[in-house]
Image 1 (cartoon, rainbow, N blue to C red):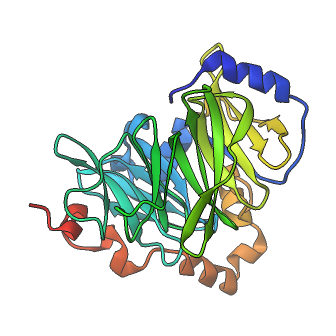
Image 2: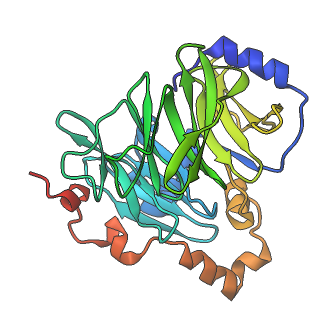
Length: 318
């Protein structure tokens, strides 16, 4: 986690006491993540913390935890699945429509490349990558600038921005690129409207008091809130929620000791499971179970269900 510690502390002190929004924040310790991985894939699934990535789907009722080169754990309110991964797979992103894999980060040519099904065998090079939760658009940062492209046309830039992009999110009227403005040393969020195939960048929203490099963990498009993480002077991770519409922010309270990451989780069943609370009754109904099953990745697209599945096989690796 690359952070500007003291700047983040200053922002947290300014924000203390502000209250708004309805986003539910769940914080995760390395032990929490390891426990979820083990519940789905067994103790052999455990990967070093730095090689584990925690995602949520767009609907918010599923986590998928990627242990680089080992396993992927899919976590629902009342069940879990496990997919073995190729040793080359470092991270992956699933789409909203059917849960299929939209893109994956893989070891390639002594480096890391982003691979998408329509992107050819070489993959896409860059400093950092992200795919927004619907799985339709991807972000590639080259440091001083970043580009956004449709996943199905990865070499066609929808828009270029003079920002070191860290995360890409979907908004009701377009996209949101969040990253570091190197010229101002500030964390900025750039709204991008999509109109008839044309992308137009709006005025950057400076996240008040937050320096470049603070980690962007999640975004809630219903409340227009960013979830941020940074280190205090003791090296302990603190979390804050910043509302882009109002300019207000608040500290996340009741953080688990030792927590290193966090997500917005608003699905009642999954939220209850992650908090160790009883799952609401409606989550156990036949209708609720059917809805939950409907959010799972299709079996034909589930890498763990394909005998000898190699993610690089999609692209006819040389």
